[in-house]
Picture (cartoon, rainbow, N blue to C red):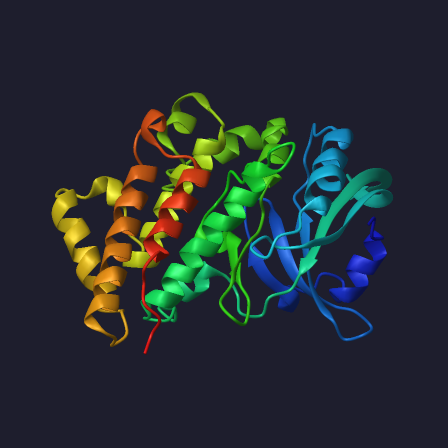
Length: 304
C-alpha cells in the first residue's frame, strides 16, 4: 500500500526528534501514532542517488509486502514520492526536486535484541534465549525459502525486534540490496569492521544465502555469551567451555534427565554457531541449522 508522505509527516509530528526510536545506515526510524491511537514505526530512508525507482518498488511491492511470517516484521506500506521544494542557494530561492522514500512497519515497544543485550536485560533463562535463537532461524529459513529468495544481508541484534512475549522479529531485511545499488553508498557500506559481515564479502563483495548464515552464527554467540569477537579468541576450546558453563547456569532447576538434554542443546548451539562462522564452503544452510535445532528438542522431557 502506497502511503502519502504527508501522512508520514503527520503521524510523526513532522519527524520530530523526540519521535526517533532508531538510527542506522539506511535511515531514521520514528514512532508514529495514527488517529485511532495505533502505534506504527516509520523508517525514512536516506536519499539513494542513482537508485532505479523500479528496483525500489520491485523490492518493496513484490517482495517485502508479501512477506508473512511470525518471525519477520510486517511491512504495512511504503512511501515513494517526488516533491518540488524551494531551497536557498547563494541568496536565491530555487526549485529543487526531492524523492521521499519511507517504510511503515508494525511497532514493537519492547525494542531490539541489541537493546536488551546492551542493557543486560535479556532474561537469564536458557529457554528464553533458545527460543529467540530458534525464532531467528525460522525467520531466516522463511526468507531464504521465498520465491524469489530474500537475503537479509544485515542481520544483527539491532535489526531483530522483540514483541511482548520475547518473540523475535527480523527487520531491515532486503534493504542492503537497495543501498548496494546506490553508488553513493557502496563505499560507505564497506568502511569499517563489521563482525556480522562474512570475510568473503569484505574481499570480493560475494553475496549468497551463506552471508546470512555467517551473521546468524555471530548473533547466536551474542545471545549465548554476550557481545564478543569469537574470531579473535586465542583459545576457542576454552572459550566454548566457558560459554557452555555460562549457558548451563541459565537452565532452570529440573530433573537430571531433562537437564542433561538441555545441556546437550546448549553444546549443540555453541558448535553450530562456530560452524556458521567457518569458511563459506563449510557453512551449513539455514535449513540444515533448523533441522539441527529441531533435533535437540527431541526427547526433552516436559518440565515438572
